[in-house]
Length: 264
Image (cartoon, rainbow, N blue to C red; front, top):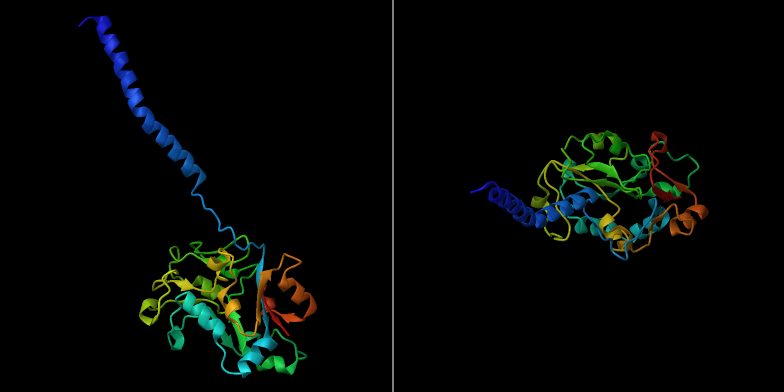
């Protein structure tokens, strides 16, 4: 084979190889661009948006409803929706629960708070604080805060160290000492079940907000004692009612700035 023929074959081979690799290179380049941009997510058209979500508890309405009978509608709605197991004794898992005045407002309420306010019970849940201690102490970032103020849990990142439980001054977190599935009589297949060894808590029903729905506890309350809304929206119901009624928040002295308000 002479020199001219060898050069011709080399050039032809290179062209054929380049053409054959071109689609693969295009796919690789497109994949790289996608990876750099990250996954895309299309929000539900009816999703609720807020800058600082908050809950207002009308204690008087709640207590009046409770006097008619042991009302647990909000608790049942929350726990059944989120597959929260019913485990007795100290291993209890709770997202929303009731407690008395002394445990709810230790050292917070002054002596001139109306006497009937002390009667209780009080609906308690995660306060989704503006300055959450649980977020600061979590070593794996499993506890994090969204831009709208909701404090979330990434159970895949949770290593069960329970630093967040120690950091939360409200006892709003529960640790799964046992497999929750063993204590669930009815499953909601649309919501994940946590595994043993992770911490969990109320999320203000972030999954429902994403579909344009209010938290389940708010919808379930027969007395309309739970009001949910955006504190940064001057026209929201929570802002309107807080401007007209006196309210308390739990343990302000610890500086976490809770976003659950109790109307006196």
